[in-house]
Image 1: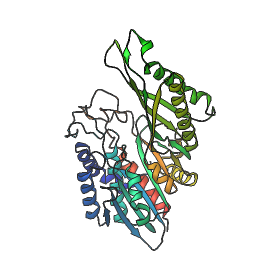
Image 2: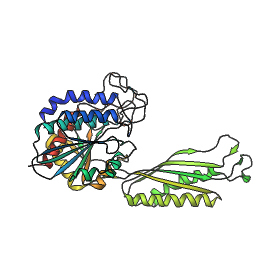
Image 3: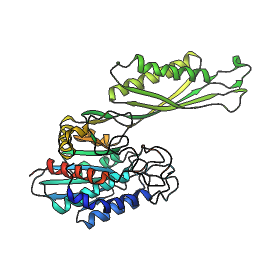
Length: 395
């Protein structure tokens, strides 16, 4: 590996910051302590900051030379509302809150890069360091953009990174095009007429209607989408009834839809609405159909993906830069990529063997209560940020 040597030397100190962040997780739009820590470190290193975008967002500005070119580097800061199983020294001190996705590590890697870039300033242009709140469902990227992120800090492109458990430490993954899916939710309420379960002819039973809807939704993917298109419809909740001898007067279905393109999403939403309303009507009932679009698909622009791939190849060797297999998980960096050219990449977090004694019994996967970020990634991820900024802003 061709790491930036000062980052290797600084890694233990940054790892201590990362573990402090892990021990003090904060949920979306509540990242007050985290933002204070980030702001304090950036200020300590002589980096001007702007605070408050997206409630708790922090933007650092590092300038060198005279070029007007600018690049944005983004890290997310928020944790998840879940109980940690780990008992090692840096485990969460806040019950029901945990850094189970590695945002503590993402913040730490960008801080390490910030310190180095501010010290050396061996580039020509501006690096914007975007410490974003509320990725886990809050749409912090969308809120920062609404409040003027790209107006206040004009940048030519924006880049993001996520650690990826199961990928080898030292591997990167990058591809052009869709790499993460849109995230959407639906809620369908079927309105019937309750009655005695022994006399169903006197009722309008919503249960068989719900069962038919669940089955019919799967035909949308198999019979309405082109076979080469990808889409997921998952009914994950069915709520109805309170007693075994009572036909309920309503049934509620909820779930998620994932796609890699907006046209496919449009088709699925339209077909789901028609299927739901007509299935209910065919059996003499009505339904209320609600569909909420959360995060759009994350789509890497080709030129920026190629550029990032070249930086990675110089850093770890081309054999350790693999194709980025698209995932149906979602990411609100997608909002930034809708507004600016850019690229979102994966960095291998290893197989979990890095975890200290006291880790939980489960696997070291994202959103798992036994997860922990691999601190060996800090000099690698930070080196990627530094080399990417230097190459983009080459004087």
